Length: 249
Image (cartoon, rainbow, N blue to C red; front, side, top):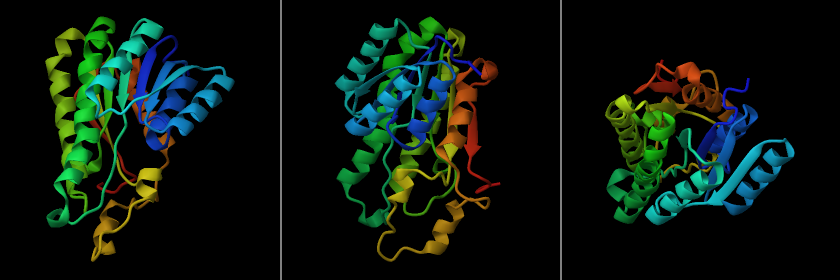
């Protein structure tokens, strides 16, 4: 399929995990891809791989929690390609803590990347998405709607991402802009492979976020993102789609 032929898509967190899966899927479907991340070497490797595959791709280092970097990034994307058709916000960080031990600085950092970073990207992109009648896909988490152990800051940030997505969907519906959220759980990515149980944590609680059918792959999420960002979902906005292998069936 070439559902994104000649369409400009900007993907955050594109160097690894779900973000990389999304970047590769959209590029394979013909997108003019603008991929951003804070990981320089993996991002350069992604650009080389996709270019060798015949894809059109540009990359840029961007910390989504930095307001000026985000504004410059979106401006550079539109300057290169002339438009923006889809924004996919994947960039995120995860911590595991007992909430009563969580430092304020760590709480603020998680929200700065996961929630405020998503807001910065959406705010910068929306004028261009209104012009193209494009769309936003935000990667939230099942932690936004179900209790996830030892993830107070992460869950709060992803709950905010989900609420923000719904607000964008209704606020911009008359402008032809769609906004949807994907809610993954138990996807084999670096962010989850680096999970460390806080001292005194209980693995029995963690089992609630382990998929009965086994862990998913970033490609499983990328396929859903591609559908939502494409014209196949032209009548879908304000939706939340779980990709959780039955964790919360």
